[in-house]
Image 1 (cartoon, rainbow, N blue to C red):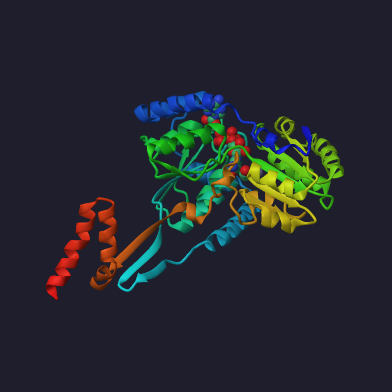
Image 2: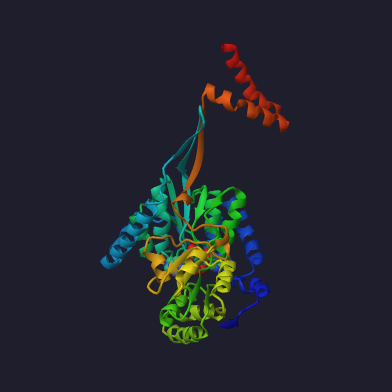
Length: 430
Ligand SMILES: NC(=O)c1ccc[n+]([C@@H]2O[C@H](COP(=O)([O-])OP(=O)(O)OC[C@H]3O[C@@H](n4cnc5c(N)ncnc54)[C@H](O)[C@@H]3O)[C@@H](O)[C@H]2O)c1
Ligand SMILES: N[C@H](CO)Cc1c[nH]c[nH+]1
Ligand SMILES: [Zn+2]
């Protein structure tokens, strides 16, 4: 952990760098695997599953009996919890539906915009260090609400070639019909190029480690869209003296336990609170089953003191955290002033875990500062906006001359002529 006091603005660029592996090294591996999967399909996928996941699979596809077995093995309490979360996520995402926008811009010129589902989508569900079945809810619920026709789910198998039962239960609950046992770069490559078993999709969604995130970014070069770079988890908490240090430490550890490359940061205008949280972190850390992972993540934690709330807020906006918790007396300043964050959690009783699982918001969010330009997954992520227009004879007479003049000025005669020919035809009929 590093403690900093009023860091100068010219040092912020260094402070906001995430503890990630060198992307250049990963890029080389990603390129290699993409090339091989594009040429050899399933053979290449199986090779990399054996290499990275340590298992040789007889079939990549999850079969019906595996799903039935999984359903039987999940407790009723867990099933009820998953169903409650699904209901809240559905309620929140269904409310994001918008009506068609229809406007008559000039008499006889009618324009409208409608949303259409992306027909084929691929969902990546992380499974390397923890089976994130909650991510299935976050991705399938909006995909189904949007009306996507083909939904394929990829997730890595364990060393026995199996998928965690909670992943299978949640997938069938959400109506996923194709579950492929493949993870990491090879999964993203499969959904990018299509193989004998993995369908090619139009857009890939979902979080993952740095290998997955770099692979998703490369997929865009091959014409596949992605939701956003959603890599190793991050949390930034602003806490003043009104915060509860035990709550703050528990939140920071909740994201630190995701992976050794997670980053959690505390920003405060109270030196006393920083000290209290530090003590709590040490006390709570030793009790965690995943303390080895969390300890490594906490090693790159920064505890930053600022004299002024406004400077603290400026720093937070420069950092652009995936998750931002506000535990402050003056919470409105932060709620109104935050510009760059994936998801915001307000007050002492809003743990980040609530958004991870069950409050209703989506947990697939931009990391590594991408909250400055990307939104988290939402209903619109699964839709495209299409525009339509219908112009009457009267309408083309109203705007035709403007089009002719503009086309002429751009030196595009054929554009101009497409209007002129119609105007002349109308004149001749008069
Ligand atoms: N930003 C978000 O919205 C969000 C949400 C949930 C989780 N996450 C993050 O997702 C990540 C999940 O990571 P994970 O590792 O547990 O699961 P994962 O499924 O993303 O990755 C596991 C796969 O990585 C591949 N792999 C492992 N080592 C490799 C190597 N050396 N070279 C090439 N490929 C390799 C393997 O194929 C393996 O199947 C965590 O970092 C977590 O913080 C982010
Ligand atoms: N915190 C993760 C997003 O960064 C999501 C998650 C899933 N399960 C638990 N947490
Ligand atoms: Zn989490």
